[in-house]
Image (tube, rainbow, N blue to C red; front, side, top):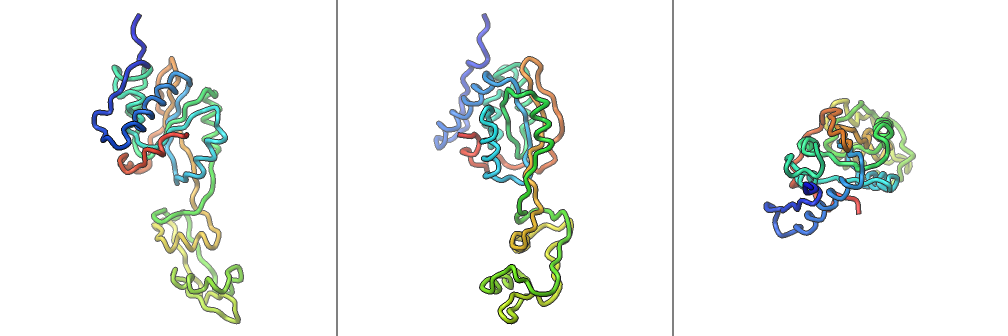
Length: 238
């Protein structure tokens, strides 16, 4: 009887001693999940927010999320037909590019894909975000702000002053233009005025179904990131 691919031991020969045990555990966890779950969805993340990813994990307790270093996840899946934990997984491993994650689940694939299509959580844009619309603040009183914050508003670039104890914008102010890359000051202003431009969303890129293999759904259009800049501890839910 041929030896099961799941029993193959993976050695992290290029990994430093620091974090070696944790990385080896992640590889082993992925291999166990390959055995336990029938479907693996590869997804990309737009506007990553750790708190929202944590909420999703809480709602999907019957499944398992991995997110982080692609090199480590690829080792768990197997980077070649000889190393893969299940037939065809090396194709999924090769598709791990940019900021992406894996969802291991036994839920029907159509249910998972429909959920990802509909799911999205609005959030405040951060510095570096490309503005999706132009936003301006009209001249006049801004009673929603306490007088004590007026100096801070001026530091952010807003032409304000205190008039009879009320924060007042002295002239119309363009916070951002559509297509513009937000500065830290612009992102802060948008948050202060309650304008959420970003959406935290998971986009399915491909799916592996046991006994069927891997199918590419879409290409990841996000910029690729250096895996080594990610924290290994963010790879898996604990």
